Length: 354
Ligand code: HEM
Image 1 (cartoon, rainbow, N blue to C red):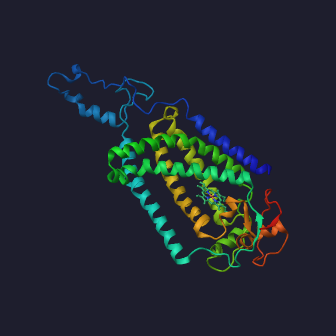
Image 2: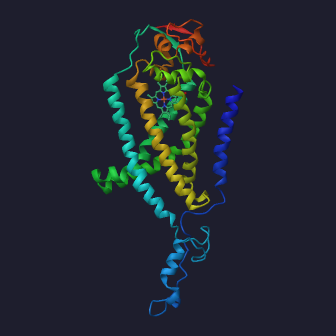
Image 3: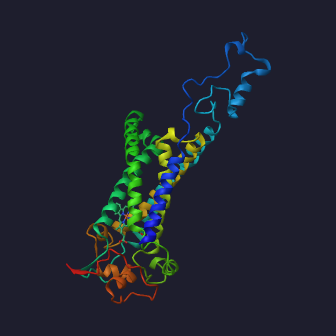
């Protein structure tokens, strides 16, 4: 208990530190009074400078030589050449492949559903339930899920809208969508950090990896090699949890840098932040699609744990046998003698008839 509180505190402090270190920084934009020092006098009446030609100025500007513009918060830098590289990476890789990655995940999920179908309860519903998630756990989960969905939708409109939406709905209508998406994204971004810390704090117990996870992997989570034992969370859920925690932290840090650009130290940091933010977000959205699939149409009885807080006893035995044994003290027929599951503080040791 102490350990996970400590980790939660470190997690939170790290987030705050990174935000604070970006203070004392410069503006993204060149200062209003930034001017090229080329004057009429320098250029001369024939518009040439001889050895001091404009191409030399242009070359120096592109190399980021300072002193060509008045110094200000951007350190005399008028043109940052890496901006072009950043624009090309964003256009040719991030925007191009993000759409394909998400489309591929959707296709894989549809194919999986068509081939495998819904994972049914082998023993059917028993009519008895066991408590799995407390109200605070469910509230934290749905708070995170709502914020994440709002951020995901608005973020994708901003990232892919100009390519995928504007040609369909027209530039004028798209500009309204984009502006609403920007406002929504800026509003929900900081709330994501609150949801992340809250969720991390409540869900970290039980999500540390154990030997039983190795057996679960070797059995492909039960898809190959028969029943795979699991404690409160199986390996797949643990990976999902840590993906949300770690990638969520990265997205939060880069999001703060982007939402408050006047705090950031330099342009390159902002450019790297947009790239890391987009890759992390698209990766997490792709993972979330799989999570939402398995939590809804993919597996019979799974959603109950996040709606009512209770799951059917047969669901507990079939998918989390070690946890079931830990909570009830009763042997589950599916048990494959793995490591004992992790007892949760919120497991209320109760089975209820319905
Ligand atoms: C409509 C969307 C969603 C549905 C239907 C859903 C459903 C579920 C369900 C049923 C569980 C419990 C699984 C179990 O009992 O073992 C769960 C757990 C969880 N969900 Fe979601 N979820 C959704 C969205 C999200 C989103 C957007 C996030 C985060 C960005 C998220 C993060 C988690 C985490 C971290 C867990 C706990 C897994 C663990 O700790 O290992 N969920 N979800």
